[in-house]
Image 1 (spheres, one colour):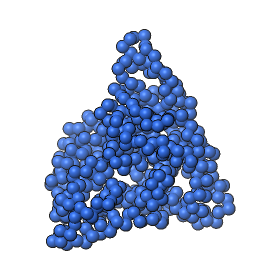
Image 2 (cartoon, one colour; image 1 turned 90 degrees about the vertical axis):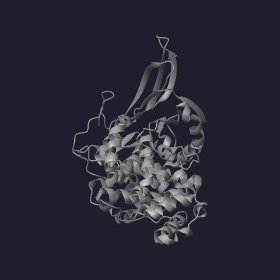
Image 3 (tube, rainbow, N blue to C red; image 1 turned 90 degrees about the horizontal axis):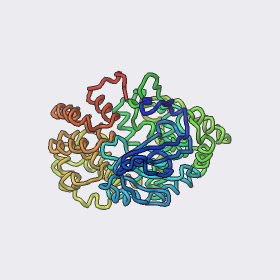
Image 4 (cartoon, one colour; image 1 turned 180 degrees about the vertical axis):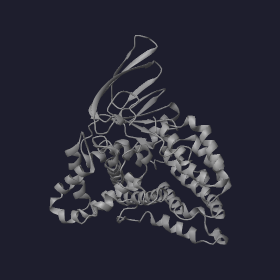
Length: 479
């Protein structure tokens, strides 16, 4: 889309292998989205030369390079975790289950062809949860929760090694072939590691995110289609959870009507084998689906393909998810919503003492779905559950949103601190929007953005700028 780094056909429809030789100051480390192929002292004794080879053809968006004062720890037979020294030991502990996830993915999808699977924890300004660069996944430090509760993101990036990196969307109108499939496989992996009910629990949380995104964009908005029309549109503007969660829901639904996990997993492995090293579109995938399930054509013909693929808004059918882990969250949410403000003494820390971090996350997410809470309820939530003291970024994000939507002034400093200490768009954009929507903090939102804009990645800068109406949606985007 930008092709600013080097001349190339910057489209996911074109793939190529590459080799690289990079010379950098001796004290710095160079890494790329490729296998390390040796290093030498350069002609200048103050410099060092690094060599890399990527034998597998990749699209240009997967070309990545990092140079910095990096350290590493080996956490598996094919995995090192890299970061600045402040994060490296914490990262090694947090991501210690990486090899287990890789083995689960191989069982589902076939051979891992990339040789190594390294992780790089980037500075906090990184705009995404992760980026699936081959051989070197980029990660945000907001995943360092201390309890491994946010490692499904690692499962997601691992799954991209097959869906996205091996089988790639032909263009970004078919982005769901990358992200919907990868989200589906991510939850397959965590389900194998932590039980099928947890897979369903994560799907329920994803459905909640999908509902919020459709509400934010508008149920008739073209960007809520699984296959949107992006002619004349910067794909960055269309970025949202829609291709992830609507795509995952579609695949979950198809699995349920085509014979269950065993039958569908055989199809998915065959699909990856058939189209690896290629870039395809939705029609190609659909044709292969019909070919593989030729004995179930009558079932496939009953699928509302137009509604799933090309209609805006929520999916036509909600898959049937096991809610055994979510029920405690929804029950507690209901109790809070129905409680009289003069009867909040019924709530204690014991309410959530057996909740996992993901369950606390979803409890807050359910509370945030409806009308804003009263200030009195928000204050009581903080008092009894100590939400302001929790370091899990997913929990903190939902807690701050609840407080801002309630117009609770005490949360404002924490909100500003949160959006200026890290730049993950998933968190930063909704919080900036909440600040902008509240008359009392609108000027603060704009001034905070302007003060910290030089610290933001391009995607965050543009996205928040549009959210604050400082950048026009139809303004040409330059990289």
